[in-house]
Image 1: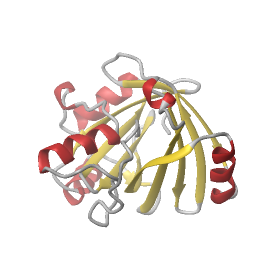
Image 2 (image 1 turned 180 degrees about the vertical axis):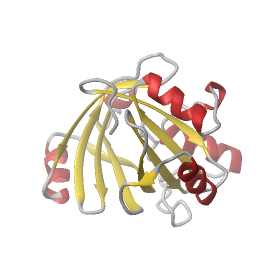
Image 3 (image 1 turned 120 degrees about the vertical axis):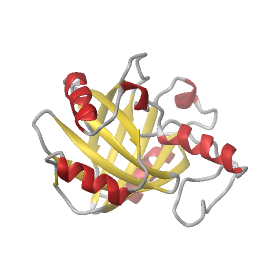
Image 4 (image 1 turned 90 degrees about the vertical axis):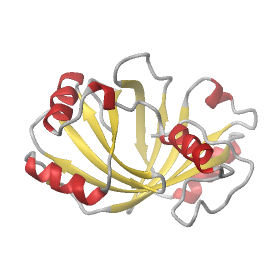
Length: 201
């Protein structure tokens, strides 16, 4: 949920060898955990004709611990960092929110999970450690200059920047493993079905 300015989200991902070495790297760079490691469950919604996905837009219901969030993301801009509009609102009842979306003709599609830990350090942005079924990643969220400085401090260069969403990374992982895509969940990619991953983060 990082925003460089106003409702604009600016971020990159960095691929990691493993979460344990990433935690050590972050501590050496002066970052400290700002919350406990928490399971995050995300479900993307779209029309039956996948109108949002075709326009590179996203509508997502997320459960992060006890926090329930409805998020809209606009089409990403072509840039060195991932830049897109992001609008979010807290919801009090996940089932009711899902029912509202269904009444509007939207369907639940791609589901993806990750364990997320937030880190705080030098002012200017947020570092998120994501442990996913397809590997571990850092997300750096903040102003572009802060992202570049922080990535360099952690030993990464521009060539390491990933601007793809988790849906795209999941599809790439499935192709590499010869696995039929389904949902990006921890229980051995449970729930394989005909849904196609949409755009995610």
